[in-house]
Image 1: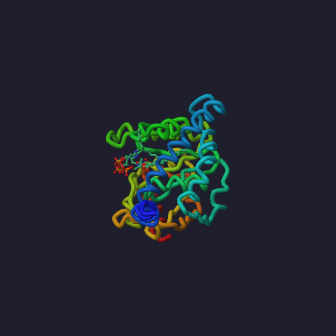
Image 2: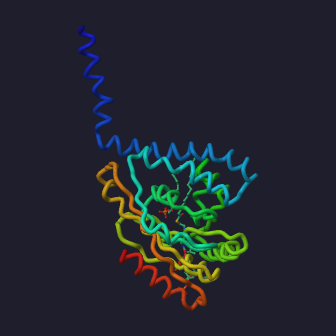
Image 3: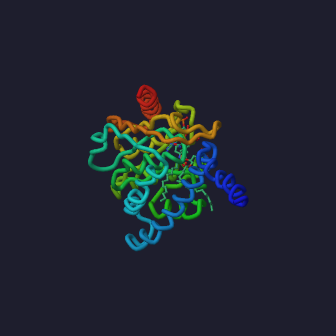
Length: 254
Ligand SMILES: CCCCCCCCCCCCCC(=O)SCCNC(=O)CCNC(=O)[C@H](O)C(C)(C)COP(=O)(O)OP(=O)(O)OC[C@H]1O[C@@H](n2cnc3c(N)ncnc32)[C@H](O)[C@@H]1OP(=O)(O)O
Ligand SMILES: CCCCCCCC/C=C\CCCCCCCC(=O)OC[C@@H](O)COP(=O)(O)O
């Protein structure tokens, strides 16, 4: 009996841990990374069997495997403006970039034959890096701007040759302040060089459920707003700055 009295408070420890929001914060973050690594591990052989190597069609496998992850983190995703993605042929999607959780919203609406531009360091992220490569993700070296620009110029040609859509985060880095950082120009050069429309997508702020400083990761809703296309037909490199400014205005007012 005495032993039972000793043990029962100990049993409370895991219970307290479960209810502690700090524990939940770290647990969800760890779980997210571990689960994505595991999903990537599943996606690698599936992609190799389906396509034999690096192929944009592998994004379908990634999209399929990632779509349930929101439920495991207690998140809901609400999408508006889905009709704006119903365009034939290639286009450039631009969106704000808050954290690695953006991948969940991205996979919720990712059109067929669409991949993304990412910093080259991501290729070293274990199984996730390998599946990004297999999914045709275009890697750029942000420290060597001229290399990055060349890679993006090549991507403009590939978009047309292979009928590919590209998702670019024009802020070029993550930003959780709920506003938009100044846009870099790569996404707009890309769209103008390929003469394809830009479709802006706005992710709602994660501040309603996620606070890094306060160590809070609660349940919540991510709202994705897909906006009408911005045409680039007939534009040249001289128009890129005004196109970037216009897209920035559209993003901040939505
Ligand atoms: C199951 C497991 C699932 C796994 C999950 C899978 C999903 C993974 C999701 C991963 C998500 C990962 C997400 C991520 O990793 S986000 C990070 C990586 N992505 C980006 O950085 C994209 C956006 N970056 C850019 O656009 C930058 O502009 C680059 C990098 C290109 C240069 O940046 P820079 O810092 O230098 O600044 P600048 O833009 O002011 O440009 C400077 C000058 O160059 C001119 N210029 C620029 N570009 C071009 C061009 N193309 N042709 C001709 N000229 C060009 C430009 O006009 C300007 O000149 P001027 O106008 O002042 O005279
Ligand atoms: C053995 C290596 C272990 C590495 C572990 C890290 C693996 C990450 C695993 C799962 C996360 C899920 C999807 C990853 C996609 C995240 C892409 C991302 O958000 O990259 C940051 C980049 O946009 C901007 O970077 P900076 O804010 O400029 O810096």
